[in-house]
Amino acid sequence: METTGPDSHSYANFNDVIVTHYHISLRTDFTRQILYGYVDINVKVLNSTDKIYLDIKELAIEKIVDRNNKGLVWTIPKSHEFGNCLQIIIPEDKRTVDSIFTITVRYSTTPESESIQWLEPSQTAGKNHPYCYTQCQAILARTLLPCQDTPAIKAPYSIAISCPQPLIAVCSGISCGKSSLDNYGYVSYFFNQPNSVPAYLIAIVVGELKKGSIGPRSSVYTEKELLDRAIYEFSEDTENYIQAAEEITGIKYKWMTYDMVVLPSAFPYGGMENPNLTFLSSSLLSGDRSLTNVVAHEIVHSWSGNLITNSSWNDFWLNEGFTVYIERLVMGKVAKSTQFRHFEMLCGYNDLRKTMTELKDKPEFTKLVPNLNNVHPDDAFSKVPYEKGSLFLYYLETIVGESEIQNWLNAYFTTFSNKSLNTLEMKDHFTNHFSNKDLSSIDWDTWLYATGLPPLNPTLVLDKTLSQKCTDLAQQWIQYNGKSATKNDLKGFRSEQTMFFLDEIINNGPLSHQTLDRMKSLYNLSNSPNVEICFRWLQLCLKSNYLSVIPQVADFLSKHGRGLYVKPLYKLLNTVDHEAAVKIYKTNRSFYHSVIRNVFDKELMN
Image 1: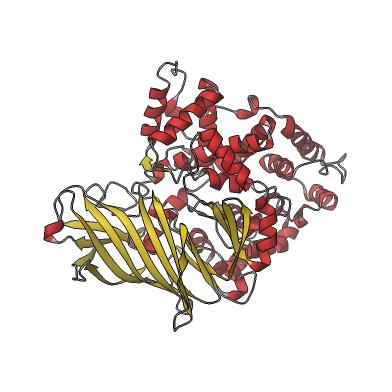
Image 2 (image 1 turned 90 degrees about the vertical axis):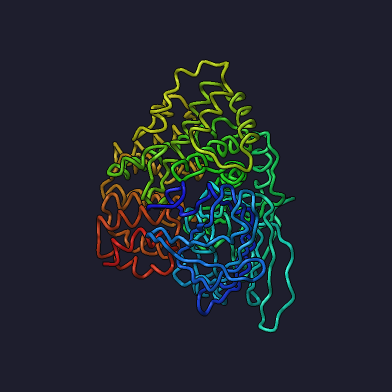
């Protein structure tokens, strides 16, 4: 992508002109599957220029005017598969340094706008009303509104969303109330985000939603059919996680409220850290609170990712690696167990090992800081920035000490609050902070730029008290086909330990069909209410060419749209039974978000 600006994934010329505020006013049209209205964009000139370049994709631009409703000249001079360049000529009297002015773009989205997923009533829990939500990370904000769609630029925003009753709208900001019912049966909902955030964190949900309290500063929105389950799942630990993150970072939570919305299971991620409104998949409602680490993860993003943001998608690990590292400190603190923190790290290392195997033909994506020029960020999405990044921070902790690295985190979040940065800036800050320590043993280049597994194997240094039983049981099945296994083996395990047990086998499998038959009869893993356990069981079966499981795989893929599950299962299924993979995908394609469809359309729709 040949861009006009410094971000290889964006046309925005943000070195010359920056957005300082967005006001978004949109109306929902479920019949046409579009949002339509306008956005007011406040901008400031940094270097004398006569043009501003914004990112758009799959938007229908009606007109562009200034504050006095005078038409502005605009064109689309460049296009790429990632999006289009919207060029707007700046009025002559606004072209000098420090000029501030407002552009209003009247437009609509289109049914092809990839950031918006429209669900039919049949795809919701209630089955009575349609539903829509947005997902803008990484570079899909440009399909929701004209913007500087780069994490390098952060701006506050306000949103007004109109929708027909009985639907309501919730957005990634502080609620400012709603309007009365208009003549068309629509109500407008108003939100304000006073903190500066990148465009990918703008988020909207419209559906028949209900609200329940889960803490002193937290509520959960979801369909009424899921509300009691959601309140149970997330009310116990949400506030504890926030307080633990405040203590670890030394920085108070800056976003006032921490609300969540539990989305239909078509949502392509486990969670998304949209400020003031974390998105969560309903697949997390396991009934045993074993998957609330996702909430801890999204809460920590309130510091790493939202307060401080990677300045490009090459540096995505600055968002995710920091978040996973702090998340596990939070989980250990809430559980009052260093053993549990170490166990979570070992689970993450298992995930990293699996990922490295999956990416063996794409070595660039195994780097902590890959080169993603001309690569869509979603194509490079994996566990690498999460797990390799968090392991690097743990390694730095072993060099300087746990209390010292937490002191550095406080300085880091203080210095870069409300800013975006790259890896070299992070490195310089770390080395300057510890200028009185000997850091010569840190091989920065290997950690940051080498392919494959990192130079630290955590299995050699972490406490394995909670993982050893899992490993021992896995070895019974790997080496001895589970001959001495009993139906009580998993009864003393936490859900996380059952996941670890299955990961150990997946990483060292496959198993014979006879062995899988025995495991199925003893453990009944395919019927687990925990989506993570069920996913691992299906993954193990497909890896072992255990084709009798395909009907269960088809059922799972019709109910869960999270990429972490869908992508590995389709890839394995495509290997063992291409025709089944094609049939199941075509049946469920409309259920999946565009970030999933973009991966498999070429492979499974020909």
